[in-house]
Length: 329
Image 1 (spheres, helix red, strand yellow):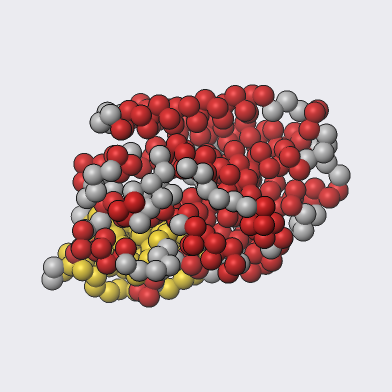
Image 2 (tube, rainbow, N blue to C red; image 1 turned 180 degrees about the vertical axis):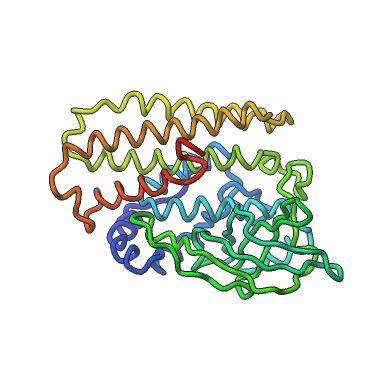
């Protein structure tokens, strides 16, 4: 199954990318396509209103979206990762969410909140630095500490206050703003545990360790953007892309192998997770070297912010600072 990315859509995204940077979020016309095409649910099963893609196929789709535009691919990647949490939610809450049109979940993996049990629910408060796609979110996930442990919870966007603090040089249109929650009570069914053994849906995709899912999907964003930079750059022949392409192929092959294991009921251990994270970091590091070596051969247009070449360069260098991708995690 392939995602339908027409020439017209690619042109729309790239023609409005400068406007998107200035606005700090994807344009309405682009977002409408994301929702209509169901790209936030790439690898969810059909009974969760998903596209039902095999996970490695979804990773390749995310790479293509990042090739179209870095902010587009990153926003879909982070939000689809949050939609994956649907497979861990209370069944009644899951059902309530699935009937909602335009559902968009995003969130933060940082434990920025604190909570205590209270009257069949939780008293919560907290603040989180960044959540990609925050301006479009209808719900947000967030981690809270409770008695020395971390608990994930789902918050209604009406319950949070967005903090416009996203001021990076790249990935400007991801709306990766912060959010805060004033002290309030939420029902117990909003808490969930991101553990393959605690999944509430039997599909194999929910047996994937979250770190593995994150490593492959985030690395695909880097490869998509690097591929686009190489296409746009002048004097490509001066720098070999072979080492980068080889490592990309190895990462995608490892993704397929791990997925086949999961489908057979074999849980990838910490060694496999560590290898995947290292591969993602190595690929990011090699991509940065390739892009920077090519950048030195470009004209002054490479430094002008309104050009696509410069935007892709800025996006790559910003995305590469994600804790899972940078050389020192």
